[in-house]
Image 1 (cartoon, rainbow, N blue to C red):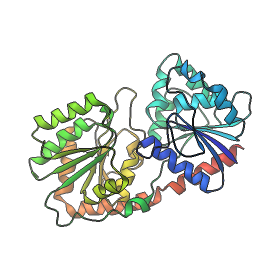
Image 2: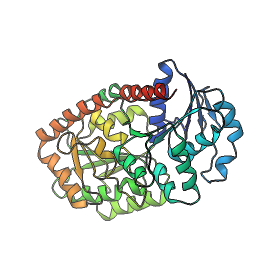
Image 3: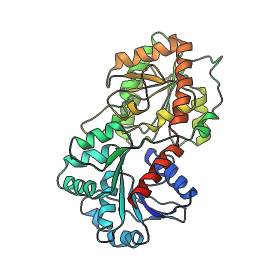
Image 4: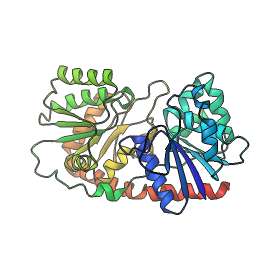
Length: 361
């Protein structure tokens, strides 16, 4: 079996790069031959920087001749998002009789279905696909609102429990209460909600420290968050990090009391899954997330975490305080979270992918 993967990158410092790499390396370890075409450069010899550096409908046609050369060598084309990679995969496979798998991830598996002319391209690609594998029930629901399909199913992402279970348990005896968020700093991640909630929780717990780890390239939003922190008197409580090594991130998971991420749906931009909730659970942390998004596939309210309504500062603050007020309850959620993470592992995800591969060949 030889598989051609299409994705933005295999950079583990980005969410989509992390999930692609975790799948690709396991598929490769199980004996499948792989070629990976990306938009960003990699030093791996089986990763080729071929995909266009533009999402325009015209731009995606430019490299098709080169992509088809790789497609001819493979049995399956597997695109890690609807647009542009699912469309590119469908176009590259025309006349080659190759099987096509498209992952339904999040925003770019749904938003283009509302945009002319690319919505017609994406609808055509979805119908042409042998299988669409959505990473969450929410993503599947959003796709099916816009197009009728019978080739679609949900396969959740996973986590490498061993990587995060090594986080040292440093919380007992700490002088301060620590909250951690991980994810790119962009409006749909809801940091402006989380920061306001932390400010409210600080009224009862003035020793709160809030660490936010994520790409800061969305400079306008990052500036707003820093200004908001200043206006709320949190300059000494909030710490922004980016480009940190895995060891540092695992150390932060080990020090934290609570993991917090409060995504919001902005038009058709949404959180497709929330891999970081699983990473936090694997580290033994109780998590706080938002309802009405992909996070609901991971977070079972009052079992391994707490769900708050989107854009709801008051209820998010209450969730934080509830966990700080009830340490035994928080510990139990963390323990349950570790069980959830063990169940939702990458090997299980890849098992399901191989079943799909074999079923369509």
